[in-house]
Length: 244
Image (tube, rainbow, N blue to C red; front, top):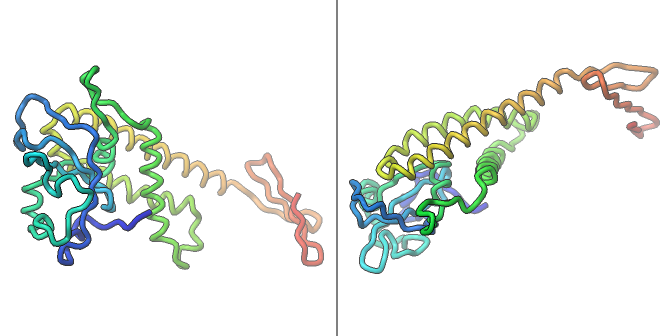
Protein backbone atom coordinates (compact mmCIF):
# COMPACT_ATOMS: atom_id res chain seq x y z
CA UNK A 1 0.00 0.00 0.00
CA UNK A 2 1.47 3.36 -1.03
CA UNK A 3 1.65 6.46 1.11
CA UNK A 4 -1.68 8.13 1.80
CA UNK A 5 -2.34 11.58 3.20
CA UNK A 6 -5.12 13.47 4.89
CA UNK A 7 -6.98 15.74 2.52
CA UNK A 8 -5.68 18.89 4.20
CA UNK A 9 -2.04 17.77 3.95
CA UNK A 10 -1.76 18.10 0.17
CA UNK A 11 0.40 20.95 -1.22
CA UNK A 12 1.59 21.99 2.24
CA UNK A 13 5.35 21.79 1.57
CA UNK A 14 5.93 23.86 -1.60
CA UNK A 15 3.50 21.74 -3.55
CA UNK A 16 4.35 18.43 -1.88
CA UNK A 17 2.74 16.00 -1.45
CA UNK A 18 0.73 16.30 -4.64
CA UNK A 19 -2.58 14.57 -5.25
CA UNK A 20 -2.42 11.46 -7.45
CA UNK A 21 -5.25 11.20 -9.95
CA UNK A 22 -6.98 8.25 -11.54
CA UNK A 23 -9.23 9.56 -14.32
CA UNK A 24 -12.63 7.99 -14.89
CA UNK A 25 -12.93 6.00 -18.09
CA UNK A 26 -16.06 7.87 -19.18
CA UNK A 27 -16.66 11.44 -20.28
CA UNK A 28 -20.15 12.50 -19.26
CA UNK A 29 -22.42 14.90 -21.04
CA UNK A 30 -26.04 15.16 -20.01
CA UNK A 31 -27.10 17.71 -22.60
CA UNK A 32 -27.98 20.07 -19.78
CA UNK A 33 -25.58 22.64 -18.45
CA UNK A 34 -24.88 22.41 -14.71
CA UNK A 35 -23.59 25.09 -12.38
CA UNK A 36 -20.08 23.97 -13.36
CA UNK A 37 -20.60 24.55 -17.09
CA UNK A 38 -20.17 22.20 -20.02
CA UNK A 39 -16.37 22.41 -19.87
CA UNK A 40 -16.35 20.10 -16.86
CA UNK A 41 -16.79 16.66 -18.35
CA UNK A 42 -14.74 14.12 -16.38
CA UNK A 43 -13.96 12.97 -12.87
CA UNK A 44 -10.52 12.39 -11.36
CA UNK A 45 -10.26 10.22 -8.24
CA UNK A 46 -7.58 11.27 -5.75
CA UNK A 47 -6.20 7.84 -4.93
CA UNK A 48 -3.50 8.79 -2.42
CA UNK A 49 -5.93 10.44 -0.01
CA UNK A 50 -6.66 8.64 3.25
CA UNK A 51 -10.31 8.69 2.21
CA UNK A 52 -10.45 9.11 -1.59
CA UNK A 53 -12.34 12.02 -3.08
CA UNK A 54 -13.31 13.09 -6.58
CA UNK A 55 -12.43 16.26 -8.45
CA UNK A 56 -14.08 17.60 -11.57
CA UNK A 57 -11.64 18.14 -14.44
CA UNK A 58 -12.06 20.87 -17.01
CA UNK A 59 -11.29 20.88 -20.72
CA UNK A 60 -8.83 23.37 -22.11
CA UNK A 61 -8.57 22.69 -25.83
CA UNK A 62 -6.99 19.20 -26.04
CA UNK A 63 -5.88 19.07 -22.42
CA UNK A 64 -7.51 18.82 -19.05
CA UNK A 65 -7.03 20.97 -16.00
CA UNK A 66 -5.38 20.48 -13.55
CA UNK A 67 -2.37 18.78 -15.12
CA UNK A 68 -3.10 18.05 -18.78
CA UNK A 69 -4.23 14.52 -18.02
CA UNK A 70 -1.11 13.56 -16.07
CA UNK A 71 -1.50 11.42 -12.99
CA UNK A 72 0.02 14.05 -10.70
CA UNK A 73 0.35 17.84 -10.73
CA UNK A 74 3.94 19.09 -10.74
CA UNK A 75 4.96 20.40 -7.33
CA UNK A 76 6.28 23.56 -9.01
CA UNK A 77 3.31 23.85 -11.39
CA UNK A 78 0.58 26.46 -11.41
CA UNK A 79 -2.02 24.20 -9.76
CA UNK A 80 0.19 23.39 -6.79
CA UNK A 81 0.92 27.08 -6.23
CA UNK A 82 -2.76 27.99 -5.89
CA UNK A 83 -4.46 28.33 -2.53
CA UNK A 84 -6.82 25.56 -1.46
CA UNK A 85 -9.88 27.65 -2.30
CA UNK A 86 -8.43 28.54 -5.73
CA UNK A 87 -7.76 24.86 -6.50
CA UNK A 88 -11.32 23.97 -5.48
CA UNK A 89 -12.63 26.73 -7.73
CA UNK A 90 -10.65 25.44 -10.72
CA UNK A 91 -11.40 21.75 -10.11
CA UNK A 92 -14.28 21.42 -7.64
CA UNK A 93 -14.45 18.46 -5.27
CA UNK A 94 -17.68 16.61 -5.83
CA UNK A 95 -17.73 13.31 -3.90
CA UNK A 96 -15.91 11.65 -1.01
CA UNK A 97 -15.35 8.19 0.44
CA UNK A 98 -17.03 5.10 -0.97
CA UNK A 99 -19.25 7.22 -3.26
CA UNK A 100 -16.12 8.54 -5.00
CA UNK A 101 -14.65 5.04 -5.37
CA UNK A 102 -17.96 3.81 -6.77
CA UNK A 103 -18.07 6.58 -9.41
CA UNK A 104 -14.55 5.69 -10.49
CA UNK A 105 -15.73 2.10 -10.99
CA UNK A 106 -18.27 3.09 -13.65
CA UNK A 107 -17.97 3.18 -17.41
CA UNK A 108 -20.48 4.48 -19.94
CA UNK A 109 -22.18 2.14 -22.41
CA UNK A 110 -23.20 4.14 -25.48
CA UNK A 111 -25.52 1.38 -26.72
CA UNK A 112 -27.48 1.21 -23.48
CA UNK A 113 -26.96 4.93 -22.88
CA UNK A 114 -26.34 4.11 -19.29
CA UNK A 115 -23.52 3.61 -16.80
CA UNK A 116 -22.17 0.11 -16.13
CA UNK A 117 -20.20 -1.14 -13.12
CA UNK A 118 -16.77 -2.44 -14.16
CA UNK A 119 -16.35 -4.51 -10.99
CA UNK A 120 -18.98 -6.43 -9.06
CA UNK A 121 -20.32 -4.13 -6.34
CA UNK A 122 -19.96 -6.67 -3.53
CA UNK A 123 -16.32 -7.18 -4.45
CA UNK A 124 -15.75 -3.43 -4.60
CA UNK A 125 -17.34 -3.01 -1.16
CA UNK A 126 -15.18 -5.74 0.41
CA UNK A 127 -12.00 -4.38 -1.17
CA UNK A 128 -12.71 -0.86 0.06
CA UNK A 129 -13.56 -2.10 3.55
CA UNK A 130 -10.46 -4.30 3.75
CA UNK A 131 -8.22 -1.42 2.71
CA UNK A 132 -9.68 0.89 5.36
CA UNK A 133 -9.52 -1.79 8.07
CA UNK A 134 -5.91 -2.69 7.21
CA UNK A 135 -4.94 0.95 7.54
CA UNK A 136 -6.64 1.02 10.96
CA UNK A 137 -4.73 -2.10 12.08
CA UNK A 138 -1.45 -0.59 10.89
CA UNK A 139 -2.11 2.36 13.19
CA UNK A 140 -3.12 0.16 16.14
CA UNK A 141 -0.38 -2.47 16.27
CA UNK A 142 1.66 -1.10 19.19
CA UNK A 143 2.19 -3.01 22.42
CA UNK A 144 -0.66 -1.23 24.17
CA UNK A 145 -3.01 -2.83 21.63
CA UNK A 146 -1.42 -6.30 21.77
CA UNK A 147 -3.91 -7.67 24.31
CA UNK A 148 -6.95 -6.48 22.36
CA UNK A 149 -8.53 -9.28 20.34
CA UNK A 150 -8.78 -8.76 16.59
CA UNK A 151 -12.58 -8.98 16.83
CA UNK A 152 -12.64 -6.12 19.35
CA UNK A 153 -10.31 -4.08 17.17
CA UNK A 154 -12.68 -4.54 14.26
CA UNK A 155 -15.65 -3.47 16.39
CA UNK A 156 -13.74 -0.36 17.46
CA UNK A 157 -12.90 0.32 13.82
CA UNK A 158 -16.52 -0.11 12.76
CA UNK A 159 -17.77 2.34 15.38
CA UNK A 160 -15.38 4.95 14.01
CA UNK A 161 -15.77 4.04 10.34
CA UNK A 162 -19.58 4.07 10.23
CA UNK A 163 -19.68 7.63 11.57
CA UNK A 164 -17.02 8.82 9.16
CA UNK A 165 -18.62 7.17 6.12
CA UNK A 166 -21.94 8.90 6.81
CA UNK A 167 -20.17 12.24 7.18
CA UNK A 168 -18.32 11.78 3.86
CA UNK A 169 -21.57 10.97 2.08
CA UNK A 170 -23.30 14.02 3.54
CA UNK A 171 -20.37 16.06 2.28
CA UNK A 172 -20.93 14.74 -1.26
CA UNK A 173 -23.96 16.96 -1.95
CA UNK A 174 -22.26 18.66 -4.98
CA UNK A 175 -22.88 15.39 -6.82
CA UNK A 176 -26.58 16.33 -6.94
CA UNK A 177 -25.68 18.49 -9.93
CA UNK A 178 -25.55 15.18 -11.82
CA UNK A 179 -28.88 13.62 -10.72
CA UNK A 180 -28.44 10.23 -12.41
CA UNK A 181 -24.96 9.71 -11.00
CA UNK A 182 -26.12 10.94 -7.61
CA UNK A 183 -28.94 8.38 -7.59
CA UNK A 184 -26.59 5.51 -8.51
CA UNK A 185 -24.02 6.61 -5.92
CA UNK A 186 -26.74 6.90 -3.28
CA UNK A 187 -27.80 3.29 -3.88
CA UNK A 188 -24.18 2.12 -3.67
CA UNK A 189 -23.64 4.09 -0.47
CA UNK A 190 -26.68 2.42 1.08
CA UNK A 191 -25.31 -1.00 0.09
CA UNK A 192 -21.99 -0.16 1.74
CA UNK A 193 -23.62 1.01 4.96
CA UNK A 194 -25.75 -2.16 5.04
CA UNK A 195 -22.56 -4.21 4.65
CA UNK A 196 -21.08 -2.42 7.67
CA UNK A 197 -24.17 -3.21 9.77
CA UNK A 198 -24.02 -6.90 8.79
CA UNK A 199 -20.30 -7.09 9.49
CA UNK A 200 -20.79 -5.53 12.92
CA UNK A 201 -23.50 -8.09 13.72
CA UNK A 202 -21.23 -10.96 12.61
CA UNK A 203 -18.37 -9.83 14.87
CA UNK A 204 -20.70 -9.38 17.84
CA UNK A 205 -21.95 -12.96 17.39
CA UNK A 206 -18.36 -14.24 17.36
CA UNK A 207 -17.70 -12.41 20.62
CA UNK A 208 -20.83 -13.89 22.19
CA UNK A 209 -19.76 -17.43 21.22
CA UNK A 210 -16.32 -16.89 22.72
CA UNK A 211 -17.78 -15.54 25.95
CA UNK A 212 -19.93 -18.70 26.11
CA UNK A 213 -16.83 -20.92 26.33
CA UNK A 214 -16.05 -22.58 29.69
CA UNK A 215 -12.90 -24.12 31.14
CA UNK A 216 -12.61 -26.91 33.76
CA UNK A 217 -10.03 -29.38 35.12
CA UNK A 218 -10.65 -33.12 34.50
CA UNK A 219 -8.12 -35.76 35.73
CA UNK A 220 -5.17 -33.41 35.38
CA UNK A 221 -6.25 -32.34 31.93
CA UNK A 222 -7.73 -28.98 31.08
CA UNK A 223 -11.01 -29.34 29.18
CA UNK A 224 -12.25 -26.37 27.15
CA UNK A 225 -15.91 -26.71 26.21
CA UNK A 226 -17.25 -24.44 23.48
CA UNK A 227 -21.01 -24.01 23.03
CA UNK A 228 -21.50 -27.25 24.93
CA UNK A 229 -20.64 -29.21 21.80
CA UNK A 230 -16.87 -29.45 21.32
CA UNK A 231 -14.13 -30.28 23.84
CA UNK A 232 -10.41 -29.60 23.54
CA UNK A 233 -8.09 -31.57 25.89
CA UNK A 234 -4.71 -30.08 26.67
CA UNK A 235 -2.32 -32.27 28.68
CA UNK A 236 1.06 -31.18 30.01
CA UNK A 237 3.64 -33.96 30.20
CA UNK A 238 7.25 -33.21 31.16
CA UNK A 239 7.15 -29.82 29.53
CA UNK A 240 5.45 -31.02 26.35
CA UNK A 241 1.86 -30.21 25.48
CA UNK A 242 -0.50 -32.65 23.80
CA UNK A 243 -3.73 -31.37 22.25
CA UNK A 244 -6.49 -33.74 21.21
